[in-house]
Image (cartoon, rainbow, N blue to C red; front, side):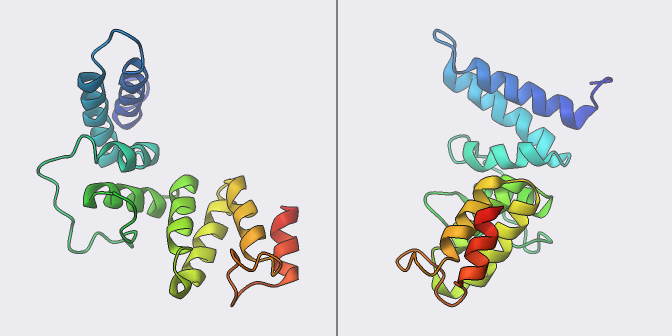
Length: 167
């Protein structure tokens, strides 16, 4: 903890515990619960990757005391799949704090509804600029008019499709 700092140390402890939970013969559920608890500590301290990980672990290992803040200070991702309110909070926090992967998920979720196409494009561009290559591929396909069944029809044009495809 002295070497890495509390935030990074809790994240690495959580990641190590989760990796151990994959080993044959070890108590998977107990180790994953411990991993989730460690990741919560790291996330509360501001560790972005811990926030992102909690988006996937929180539904299986919920914080029974979690309450969605009335004003978290960032946009909360719309409901998707079986994501719990806590999972939605953590992925939203990760996106707000600069996670390329969380912004990519936001873009995919927003891309499911025509009325949120513009937000989808914005989140995918943000994700791409943060280094997420699949976001550029998603934009290339969605903004190329040839992909009529999958494109964002109001925003698709050859120039944008080619631009993101080249990236």
